Length: 191
Length: 112
Image (cartoon, chains in turn cyan, blue):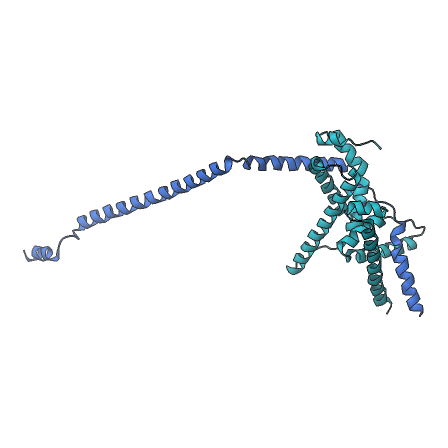
């Protein structure tokens, strides 16, 4: 991986910016996908993230690492997208405009051997994702970064500008809420 | 009892379902698409910047007021002209058909 020179990007070097995009595109895309669970939406948000990076790079004072800063933008852009999307859905419901709400759920890969296991895994991920969507945004951010990006509590704390103990608490509460949500779901399914 | 065990088992399996997924990779040519968006946005920005020029705003305001005054003035002229034309037509019509003559004169004329 080539090292990105921030000063070169600040000076308007397209080559340096291209390197920055290529070095970070997968993690930005994967993070956004963790929030929106849709490849097309994640792609749109990833573009917005890098445009924001390009515009705000002059304000980047290197207090945190470049990677942390990019992650922070990705989280904020994803949460903004979800907020905007929910508002649009509510408005569409209000005006009785029929919208295609079916999500593109083929955008994940599972390490399973048989198609049956793969299908079961797909269903489980869908159930878990809809439970994650109901979490408060702080818990959702911490849980998504931990699960999708496998980041450490320290890294998550830096991204969310909080302490490690807060992140531990957020993830603990997220898991507890998810359990309750899943209990409710499976109880309704089995009884 | 069995159902409870089943539910707990399902919950645990679902909670760990994300542990096995592969990391997603960005779609190809992401940089090209970003570059295209940046170019488009910069074009729009330069257009906005033109209208953000400090001197341009008062100049446009003065121009707007001047156009309004001129339009009002233009509208008022034809109305005056029309009024005066109307009067001229009525006068000529009255003179032509002798409407302005008093009834006495007419009777005098008949009595002659």
